[in-house]
Length: 487
Image 1: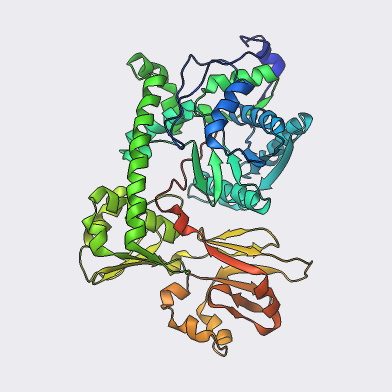
Image 2: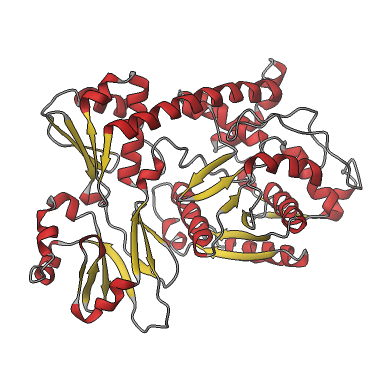
């Protein structure tokens, strides 16, 4: 059970009983670079300091923002700071709590957060991940599945509510812990560059305005504003790598690994990471072609003419994009594939949910059919990210009794479509590509296959209301996802 921190119990430990201007600031290196602490930690974050942190990350016209609030001290502090910031600018702010349902008490915790924020006049919504009840029983990592589900739920809500900006509460200590954890895993430049203050996830601008502030700054902010928060006992459980790194911080600082030095190192790495990303983007534009069906072809001569680090990064991004994955493949597997693709007639290799082959000068990458299993409801006016690759929106303008779902193409579907004029387009597709495309179904079977323009005659009107967009391409040469850390 999570413990709720009481303001009354904490008050005698608070250094200051009233708000004070924080001397903690940051030096922006570039638009999406790291923020650096410039003073001692432990001071409440003032409205002025928060506005300064937001300034390089947002455009002047931001009018609608969302904040992910787990209920921990970090996100509660962010919610209040962002609410005041939005109010001063006439913007709308909504706090979003994901009820992951991995623990029996998660729903009541989400309701507690809702009540706290309602008491502060902050608009709040709970997004429930109902699959969590099942996933927590599985042997595979429920935390990984929950992390991916949080991203989907948060960004889907933002798209459905015309909210282009999502704020997360990652702070300087999260950044440092991430750096050391990735260093221990042997990560390269991208991993060691840590979390970016501004990035894009599923077409939503994701901002981390607290990277220039410490954990103790945010706890102090909760003290000053009289905020309660939920304390997750897993933060003290040494079975988690992050907890063990957190407990060794004092020893590391004594050896010279101070907060400021580590953050400065991360800032240098982020500058280098940005330069490499620009080179990957250039190679992507020059060497790659995409189809609306989520497949990519790459010019092998251009790929291998580039510096190896650039070609490896592009190949990793393409696998992530085509496979609808949050992260790229492990480096050892990526390097083996990179070497094998030098063979001009390489038969199909599967990696990271993709099928990869080469014929002559062309490398072809498509989704691995056996990896596509997702079946989800199609909800009116709510963009659905299906299989991590296609954004499908049902723009239903009137109430409907029809219940539609989205699943992958099945061989038996051919029996319905083969009598249609447009079936030729579907028939010309390679079978492995066809089997990775979305099909809309109802209780009677297939309704439509948007990518091929095929629709059942009795549901032809639906074709005017459904839009499909392949979003994987946006993940190339961008920081699509970084580690979503709990508090």
